[in-house]
Every structure is written in structure tokens, then in C-alpha cells.
Image 1 (cartoon, protein in one colour):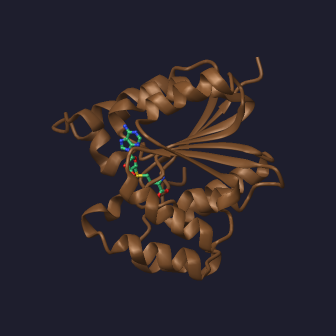
Image 2: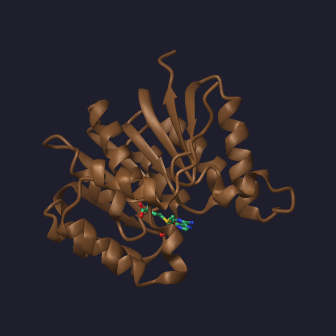
Length: 222
Ligand SMILES: C[S@@+](CC[C@H](N)C(=O)[O-])C[C@H]1O[C@@H](n2cnc3c(N)ncnc32)[C@H](O)[C@@H]1O
């Protein structure tokens, strides 16, 4: 049985050179975000954002929800995949990060398809459920406070249409999921999420060891 290939820096660089679709706006956004070193781990890996865009395009997503905007890198990649009339709703509690995001969305000329909601994500998502109704999204990306992961997931299953996708980020959580000494609320939240998703008969899943762990969840038709 083939095992998991260990990806060292040279191989990671090769993957990037062979596959990353890049431009000045994305590169500048990565650079500006890297200027906050303490928060560098919050920035999505560019290959992951590109992969999410590919997934969204593959299912013809027109209505996308992102929970956890940060500086808007994935939002931008997702917005670029939308057909005319499509939208990305993205939410974050931080004015500071989303102000940076909005600048880059304008520069990339995708701001007209992005609906930013600043505030606690649970409130935002509950508002969407009430106003837009269940099954109103094709694609949901969950990448906010990990303590609330199960609560976001349960709402995402309601919000996504049958056949739609939910993508969960950080499902390996820097390896802490397998460290018995890691008992912080965020790690417990991710462990609970992973178990909930594994045992959920409403969905099909694939857990990938890409980046910090990415789980793809497809809502079943029946
Ligand atoms: C890992 S970052 C998101 C990264 C982003 N998806 C990207 O692709 O660059 C997590 C974000 O969740 C936000 N966040 C944390 N707690 C939140 C909450 N209760 N409601 C909304 N956003 C929250 C943080 O402000 C942070 O920007």
C-alpha cells in the first residue's frame, strides 16, 4: 500500500511552480498578510485556495458562503470562479482584517460579487438561514473560530443544497488532533467536528492531509 508522501520544502516549491495560478493582486495580498507574522498561520495556503476555487467551479457554484474571511484571500479566489450573477457571502468578526480584504477585492474587480458581513459568524449564519432559507448555498467554506466548528457545521448542512459541498479547514490542526496533551478549546472543537462529520449519514466525505487538513463534505441527495 502506498503511504503518504512527505512533502519537503523542495517538493512544495515544485508543486507551486507546476500548478499555482498567481498574479500581482494575490501576491501582494499574501505579502501584506505576511507582514503580521503572529497571524501568518491564519492565511490559507495558496494551493488550497486555488483547489477550493476548482471545486466550486466543478460543481458550478453560484452561491458561496465563507465563514472566516480574514484578509480575504480565499474569498477572492472563490469570487473569481463565479458565473455572472453569482455571489460569495463572507463573514468575519474583525473590521481590521476585512478592511484589508475589501481593498484587494476592489483591486481585483470582484467586489461587486462579494457580500461581506462583519459580526459574530453564528449570528450571521443564523440570519442567512432565516432570510435566505435552507439549501440556499452551493458551497460553504468553514474557517473561523475552531471552538464553534460543530455549530458552524450543523448550520452549513442546513444551508447547503443536496449535492453541494462544505469544506472544513484545519482539520488536522497543526497535528494537535493526535496529541493527547492538547486539550485547548480549539483542538477539542476540531476533534468534535471530525467525529461528527465521520458519523454523519447525511454526507459523504474525504479528509485530505493537504495544508493543515482539509475535509471535503458532500451533502447527499436523500
Ligand atoms: C483562519 S482565519 C480565516 C482565513 C481565511 N478564510 C483565508 O482564506 O485567508 C479565521 C478568521 O475567523 C475570524 N473569526 C474568529 N472568530 C470569529 C467569530 N466568532 N465570528 C466571525 N469570525 C470569526 C477571525 O477574525 C479570522 O479572520
